[in-house]
Amino acid sequence: MSEITISDTAYHRICEIKRSDTDEQKKLLQISIISGGCSGLSYDLKLVKEHEITIKETDHLFEYPDFSLYIDMRSYLMLAGTELDFSDGLEGKGFHFHNPNASRTCSCGESFSI
Image 1: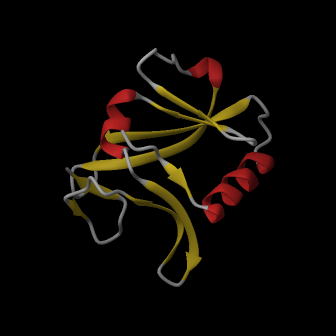
Image 2: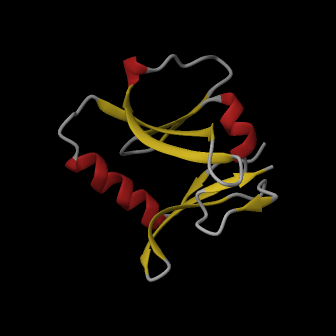
């Protein structure tokens, strides 16, 4: 299965957010898929404390020099091959998911369907 990739701009933005967060226990970047949005599924991206989640053997944990990325198995199946990018241009500031598994996305790019 394909890995999740993080662009350089997204990586640097994650590091900035992590440095500015006053809670130093938040060491994991969690990406998950939740129900919702105009296309049915939405991306959820947040920093979490390791003790706040239960990492199962089937989940995925990717180690980077500045943080660890946690994705539960259900979400990983929908995210395999995805690139996480960050843009602060005219088309919208924020994180963007380039997901090859999405069959339809909404115009804002925050929700999708498979």
